[in-house]
Length: 140
Image (cartoon, rainbow, N blue to C red; front, side, top):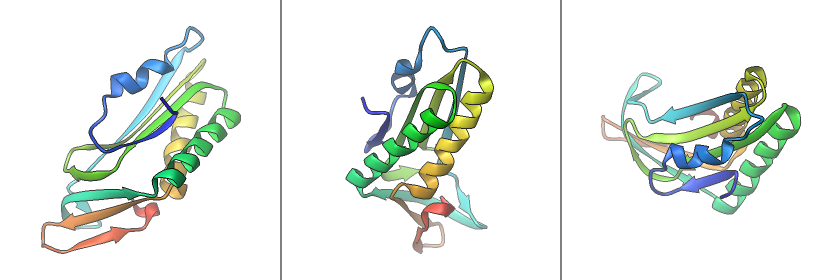
């Protein structure tokens, strides 16, 4: 399994987390991003994520490689959903193992921030009021 992956169906965090286990690891940090019921004061009914898959996978892999080079981590993974998601669904997961917690936390934060800023995944929100709109990646 690749370090960065796109998923059209819900993913199992335990399966994604398993490759992170290592005898040198003293810390594990993770981030889960869920679909919320509001955005900038508007009620959200659901959303659809679309990605340029080949570029998203390549850029996502680059972000993970940067995190490994920049922080003293053992392993790092990220999974992102594409397609239709409902309120409460898990949209993105990041997992990091390191010898120490500071590196694990820092790398986890770096990965989610860079994924949101650089990876070509777009969010189309449907609002309770009946309209919808595409959001810029930085507003995810």
